[in-house]
Image (cartoon, rainbow, N blue to C red):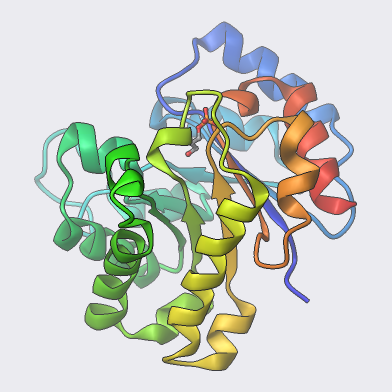
Length: 251
Ligand code: 13P
């Protein structure tokens, strides 16, 4: 049995006041038994989140890290080792906003994935197709390539300590959610691709769905056999909504 995981990606949102309020709400949440929960604040608020959620079962992660695992002369970057030292557990790598807006390439995603694991943190590898790619019938090819480059460079065993998040770009922040069937098809393909290398790793790895997940659609998505939880953007900025999504993962 794979333990469901719900992670909240706050993206570039929050002020000191709004983050304090959100953390207060999160601290009060009754996280269902058997569900793993994490939040990924902007770097600026990681320490605040760690302090506010100390003693709760909610883990903290970062949305990005430097390609170099160790600290050094690299202005404006944050090393995975610094995130580990701070008390983070997770790092998001390869989010589509970083791939498509910032221009992050596969080689950088691979280096960040490796950097994260080299200091004992767990990467959440994001993959997903654009609307254009979906309409061209290339969804499985694109997602397959994004996964294959990590397997080829680092080996399939790295997925023993990682999570994959399928986030169709056209569903992110748009209110358009993939149907449970559309998402399941891609999740099953991801698991099959991993299984072709190592059946045990594939069976154990958690594959999250992300893209306009809300309390209202979460249960249906999480009910699919290969969907093991969610990576939540907008809805993770509201503690009650996020809590309802966590409950859906536990039901
Ligand atoms: P939304 O839930 O706002 O669509 O964002 C999804 C996402 O990109 C999470 O990483």
